[in-house]
Length: 320
Image (cartoon, rainbow, N blue to C red):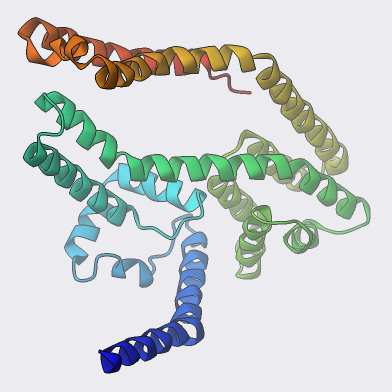
């Protein structure tokens, strides 16, 4: 027993040292190289095909080829890249399908829910968790980029006023701004250093950061190169507009906090009541799945609750 324990301790220590000294840095280097290759584009506007991207599913190259021909998969990969995650769209879809089948079979075997439609809904909800996680990370990163953009535009304006050209102004943004905005400007500077035109690099920057303010910034830079407009005045006005819009959004969220809380409470009250009734008055609520009429009402109630949550969320969401 002592020998086995000693061997286990030394094996764990060896694996930890190998992870810290060799495997971890090598994996981070591969991820960094992969993200940089994925962010670059060829002069035709298409992303170059990376050899690293073919290793996502091991030998399942045919599956990757099939995924690559589906437009929605390209859109999913773009969302993953915007969230700054090191996932492949094919891996995410495959994992979601496996999760869908596994949760459904587990619920069927354990009879976790009284009706098949509830088990199907549970499996769909479990399969949508990876997509929801990616979307939440993407939205959080987009909000961070949007909040940092006014300061970056002010820095770019000061650089242009000091006599820098657009190339050196972008380099200043890549060096002086903070993450996550700095990495996007570094990709833009890399594209310029590799021979891409300013218009192509700016458009690619707008594709990587699909924000309306970034589109305005890109249009302002391109128009200045084409028409020779006063880019300092344009950028100052753009920075002011972005700040005013962010302030308006903050005031709007503060004024609608009570309404959003009421909407959340209304959406969660049926679920809370059902759970409490299940533990306190089981004989009262069990009629919903022990009788045919109660089963119909239960299915109707769950579907209506889901539709109501979507409608309330649509009404309470204000985009600025």
